[in-house]
Every structure is written in C-alpha cells, then in structure tokens.
Length: 137
Image (cartoon, rainbow, N blue to C red; front, side, top):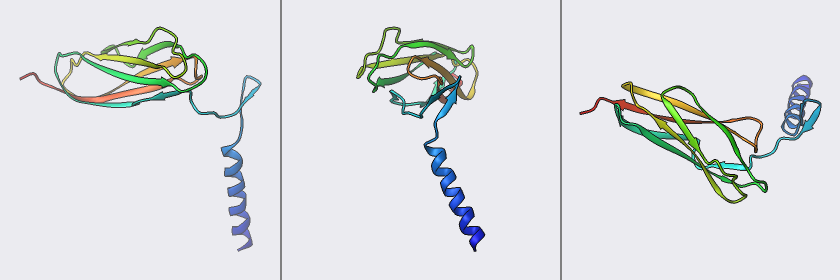
C-alpha cells in the first residue's frame, strides 16, 4: 500500500511539474503561452464537389494578441491546391484569412492540408479541408 501511495504521489507531482515546465530552445527558456491567433475553423468539411470544379475554402482568423501578426508563408500540401492569404499586417483585433483553391480533379474522398507560417508562432499551423469529389452529372 505504501508503494502505491508513493507511486501515485510521484506521478501526480511529475504531471504537475510537466504542465508548468518551461521549454528550452537554443539556450533560451520559454514558457508555454496561448496563441495570439484564433482560427474560426481549423478543419473544414466541404461536402461534395463536382469533378473538375475548383472549390475555394476560406480559413478565417482573428489576431487576439497585442502585437501585429504577419503571415510569412502558406504551403499547400499538394499540387492540387493553390493558396492565397492576407498579405498585409494584421493588427490586434483584426481579421485575416487563408484561402485554399482545390482543383477537384480526382473522384473520391479527400483530406488536404495547408500549412501556415506566421510571425506569431514558431510552430506553423496546419489547416485541413475534407470532402468528396463526385462525377459530374
């Protein structure tokens, strides 16, 4: 019973210290923070798309931080998708967007990604859209 108590206490303390632990990168210590970008949707279900009909999917976000945000790059996950995005600086409280245009060439279900790089975060945000390409009637 004592062993179980000490094991549980050690596990609890270990988890508590993990949740507030700083991250060390390049000799600098950073604490985990919330993102200054709030996405309206990170995953979009587009439903059915007729084959050969391009579909534009828009991902909207708000700069909820206190500093200007700039999208530095957007990379579609494949050659079947083109991307466009807000090129201007997004002031705090303002809205920006990422648009993905999917060419819908192949019939069947799909799940595609667009990776967004910003000045707000070191880790890029991966946005996803899903659906089914159907044969034109």
